[in-house]
Image 1 (tube, one colour):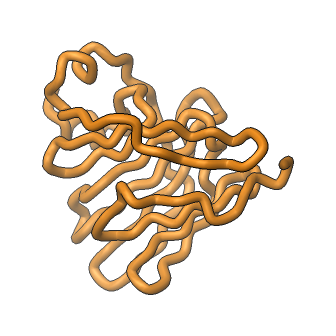
Image 2: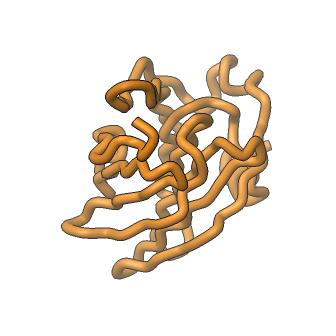
Image 3: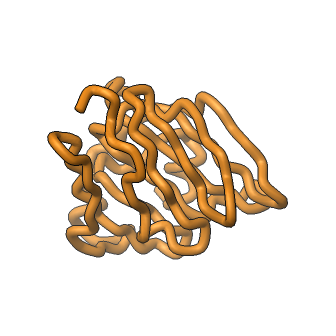
Amino acid sequence: MKRTEIFNNFQCPFINGIFLHNGEIFVLDYRNKDNATVDIVRKLNFFDDKVKKADLIDFDYMGQISYADYQIRYGEGSFGGDGVVGLFLKNELVWFLFLENSNPFCKAIIKDHIVFVQSTNGVIFSIPIDNPQLLQVVKNPDFL
């Protein structure tokens, strides 16, 4: 199955990461204990064996906002504790974020070409539209 078909079917590989339209994947380590952090631990390609062998997880978008020709869609994965964010340009996927332990994303805004998404546990991430691999935690979860 092609990359676009997988995401169009509301599925993604079960890999914490940012999936770019060109097939690059920045694999992420998100830790939400004590002081929440998110780091890139390696880079993969969508056609690497590790990605091909990964299970697929279903997801749903729960909301959407628009900014110029962009749409930000955000929501949850099928396990309940997962969060997803997709950036679309004229309805074409530019990048996609999946985090298995972030909780569902329930709010989003765009300011100064940066996407801010909030999960149901209060954590807020900033994700630059043009460099999503530079995402950061800007507010810790409410339970810390």
